Image (tube, rainbow, N blue to C red; front, side, top):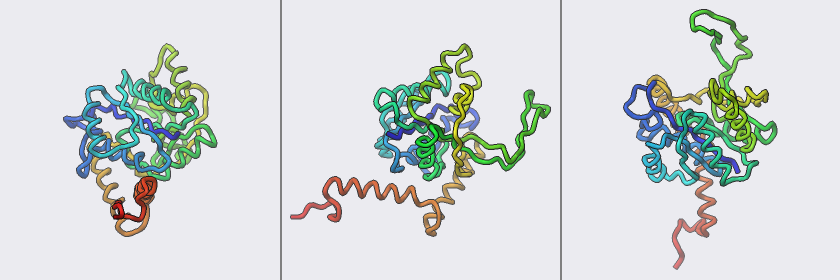
Amino acid sequence: MNIAIIFAGGSGVRMGAGVPKQFLEINGKPILIHTLQLFEEHEEIDRIYLAMNADYIRYAQQLVLDYRIDKLAAIVPGGETAQDSIYNALKKAAEENPEDSIVLIHDGVRPVVAYEVISENIEAVKEYGSAITSTLCYETILLSSDGCSVDSLPLRKESYSAQAPQSFYLKDIIEAHEMIRATESRYENMVDACTIYNALGRKPHMVIGNRGNIKVTTPEDVYMFRALLQYKENEQAFGFGLTNRLAAKMNRYRRKEAAEGTAGSGGKEEA
């Protein structure tokens, strides 16, 4: 099984909006739905688990029905921290799926990951045991402990930004979480699965992601997301670029039609 674990626990504080950022509507559709549809329409993804604040679960359930996210297996209440929430979703997935399933951990407000990047994450886990979606940094990275003076500058050609999905075998990432949870500091400074893996002395494998794979966190990100949506629409209209997601969606419904014995009949029974 290939499983997407989607974390959607943001409060929208940095966005300055009156609702959590994952529910903000862009082009008439919540950001969370934009994200879920990436995995819903990907041929290799079998199931989706969503972790979020318990106060919004009923609303999310209605959105899932409205937008027909059929692969959603469960919505799991979040925990004290983001990593607690993801752990809850991983444990729920472990109850219902084989331990050698591949899980892709992804942000609910990262709605522009490329179809190919999802596939490459799955292949990397099969070959290397892990996959961290990353992009090369085009700006100089500064390391500073106090936010005022520069402590060090890693070489730009060796600097990458970790994004999502971050992918592992289900049993391996649960084991990593449980080892961290057993420590006194638990998830302190553990911002993602890559940090957890690295803290245990494990070496995650990198997968190069698409540059537009932004995390919608600030008002500026909303404008960027709108521009990226327009870019993708133009690509489809003019026949160049990212049409894999649309083709996969069409193929899925063709297979469903064939399985129901209605292929070629337009869904109508013959007299």
